[in-house]
Image 1 (cartoon, rainbow, N blue to C red):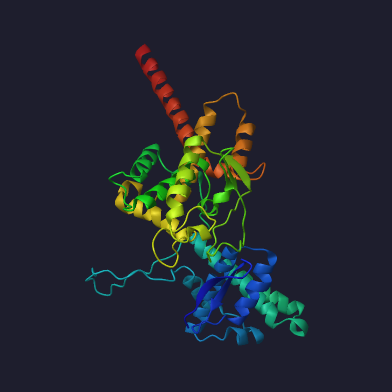
Image 2 (cartoon, rainbow, N blue to C red):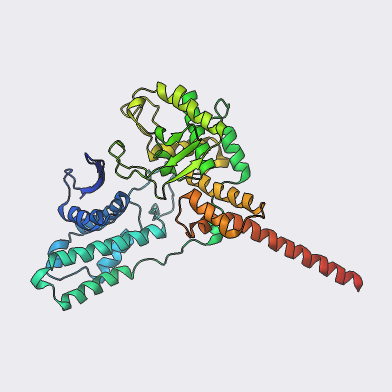
Length: 414
């Protein structure tokens, strides 16, 4: 039983994610669950997609093992411990296998290892499945059949599933300290992306200008990729040299099914004159000449000819820019749009450290505003990890060097 999720854009701009059967029809109960429990509670379409991806794993597992989940629940015969274990194992595997290569092992009994998802992804899948199964049990056993004993059975069933979630390794500060660009990588990135550079992997000069502006705005403003793709031409104030970051959830003028969103607070950010001149040049001299561009209000659009030419750039297109650069320049492998947000926070911290006339509270208050976080938010700590590690290492080196000096002095005296 092959199913797939698909996101639709409604007439008023609302995004709706559905789980479709092999004939392309919405599967009733998952659709009801998403509508009543996820969408109606104000959750994002991304959450709906995550839930449906998990439900898809559950339904395909039941189909493969010929388990009629609805009948089993109606008879209060829930999944057996062995079935739960197999289901949770399934949550660890990638849905799509990589293409087989041309090199095979000659070792007897060798089988290609199955690719697995991250531990955090497995944790999320199992959690989503447990939530759906709890709702499904309540749906089938509601009204007269739903007794206190039934409620206890359902909760025990759900708890047994949740207990099989992997231990979350979590992020530690030293892992996060390696996120972002080094100063050398930043220099290389902007050198390569500069329009006209011989090492620029993008051939079209207009695309070079667009991509350079994308990378520059990400670095200067520290925005998320979704926030950047959400910027409209009218958001720029060329008199005051400012840019408005605006929340536009379910905007009717946005035709992208996977709509980039502003996850943070709305805010106004300043831009220096030289950057504003580059934005104006792109709008007037480059963007304006792309067919259909006048019909779309978003700043960054697709240049390539085809049905989406002149339409707002997608998230996948933004990802492809960094993938292309990394493929051409291995020193930039793994660099993403979000790493530029980390880089902005590192440079901001370094800049503020050099200005001793500002208190720590003031510096963090400004950071929260510029990044779009609420007052008092601790999100900045997540992005400061690289800066914290650098300062901590410097302090430890100073301590070690002082120790070595003291030891030498002690030895010389003897």
